[in-house]
Image (cartoon, rainbow, N blue to C red):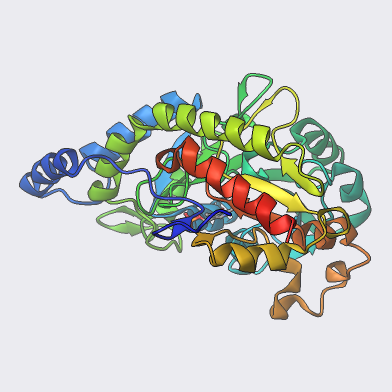
Length: 376
Ligand SMILES: *Cc1c(COP(=O)(O)O)cnc(C)c1O
């Protein structure tokens, strides 16, 4: 019989540099007195991230939600946007704050991303864009989505909060669609504690985004449009520069953990591992399984609760679906007949601890506990 962990084990821990390194950085920033409003750290982080993500155009923001919100505003979207219910609340809230109605589209059972085969039937005269999410770092079917968008003259936006460093047939994920959002929240693979970025196709967007994130102020005498405050400060950017140096090693350690989980859980009846599909390279953001009650013998919710007794805090990502939020009750697209796959998957998904520091032994122990619980 396995006993529990002595200290709580969470699904992730922030990737952070040595305190010593951050302290030195803070010294430089404080001495310079330029602590925000696009200083040296900001410029350097933007330069390095463009290189790392292999993109031409990027703008940094104080967080991913404001990046997405302002990106949608910069593209001038309105009316309805077709999106997925299987995502973090921020995706659809960025639409809400732009007075746009989300139209929920069901997901593919293998990638858990928006199902291109279901998009077309949801398009109306009011549709202005398709907003896909690269869930758990697995890329959407970007080619089919683009093809539909081109046919109907729609914009394409991606929420790549989970997909830092993901590629599609070797191509960087931030180069698809009109605009892609990355989140650098502490829970994400690469983080600036709080932070985010947009990458985009049209180089002209840069001026607009720079205005939007700084109150629309163009010069001492000119405020050109109604923006808000969404600037990444120098402390955030400085920490980001140090964290970026750690990302490649962290990916290697996570790949190692992924192999342990795959080996140990592959043959567990009723557990389906959600992994990267062929030719798609995942970001290793989360490790997710589906607990299929009929064959596993116990429900996802039961397993989630039982794991707590062993000090393991798994998460039900994504449950509830965004289409279940009370302020969307009146929308036709939230009906469960329209979202059958999403509802089923949302009742099965469970995110397990997945971060380099966890180590192989702890991952093996978690797997043994899961098997022990199944046999109860
Ligand atoms: C984290 C996350 C966001 C929000 O990003 P923030 O930087 O926390 O504002 C948006 N969408 C998804 C899918 C996320 O996981």
